[in-house]
Length: 131
Image 1 (cartoon, rainbow, N blue to C red):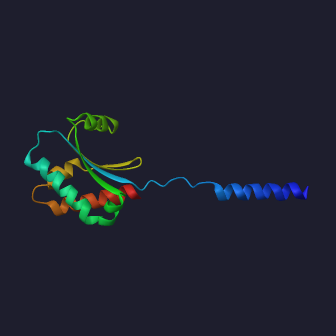
Image 2: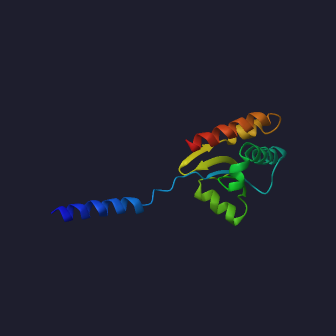
């Protein structure tokens, strides 16, 4: 009986040591969805967002933990990614796993002339999806 008990404990212990922990979701993607035809504000949303992500999180960007991607909805790949994410028009969104923060309204409000406000909103959104 003692042998079986020791064997059972040993098997449980060995299984626990070799079991993999579930992967943590740490990848943050900042997407700016747009169309081919763009106005000055659309271009500024992209510019300010890209600069903000790169300046706020240089190490994470370099490691690929935080990415900025400009996605053209008029292209096949962009249209597919847009559909996958429920995007139908110009959108600035931060995604980490199943967490999402839509910054579209604030992006278009702050892109021209209030880039520091947009930068703060981007930082806040990234922190929120990482919680």
